[in-house]
Image (cartoon, rainbow, N blue to C red; front, side):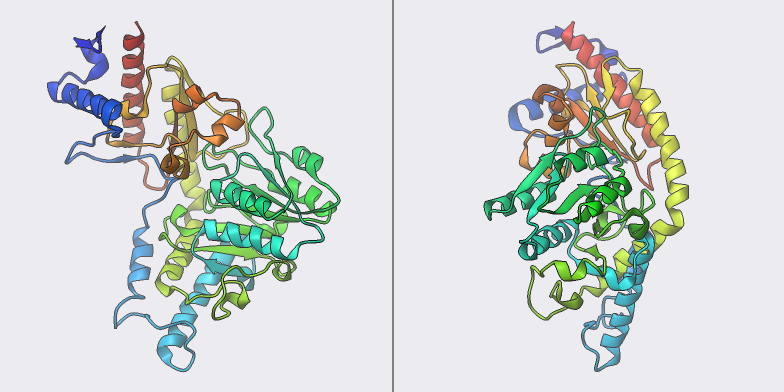
Length: 425
């Protein structure tokens, strides 16, 4: 058949049915001329590979949250200590605090509730900058999430000196790279434990040693690491750590900042009101969301080893299936990484993400970059030009990923590569 002046083999477009052919044509026209995305057929299974963007709440999380709502639930204000409704709510909040602390090897008193990792990052960085004038210099990397980079940019406008280090040839931020950027006035270094686009795993324990030797604090963005890789803040030398519940099968709108006892007095609150959370974060505590995060963290402790083994096998199956395809490159393949997140560049100029089946949920970049429509700064930092970055897809696996979904994804990429080769012929 003819498509945009090209002879396209039927088997490269469809499985052989005219409905699939129409779907491909409609999707292509919609995306090319109207800015639309992939079309999902009704009554078909969604194959979800965007766990790095968000995760579905676990059934146990939903049930625990529901118990905190309604007149028969634990709905009281945790700050109301004069009656049983408030006392019961406070008890659940503190139990949840302990559940989160246990997952990262912290003390419960070192957990500060926030609305998510973005707020946690802001509290850590702005909170330090407000009090750390004697050692005002901050260090971060060009690979960080926008929640870090935009906060650093905001601080720079206020006159705070910031250094942005670049990754190694393998796409990693190493202790040597950080050490080279340290100055006598460096007060805080902020790095992510797991990169949200590449899945690379940072050796924060090694970084902590050089940071502490210089007398500075280490903040770690663990939004993509929580529940996926073991974290022990004491053993790893982490002073502050940002977390988000919705990345670990909990609800959106709730997160936490771990602040070590030594660092507690070195950050200033950024939200004022009732002096909640030891004065670091005011605002009525959302019991149901906090319970959701606590439950999610407890489940992560119970399931992390089993989940990781299963996801590692699925990730290997997926990689083995797509790496043999012409032009497919696995980014940061030689770096230390977790199996949950894969970054693949499709080496065909005719490739667009919308060509993938609408029932396959993947991302072209991080969810935050997708919202802005800008090329991925992470991919640019590891050497991809804008064209290659536009042909890069992130697939992230999780607790509910099945072998059938992996095989579906492989088949989708096989068809798309075939389509691209036919279009280029």
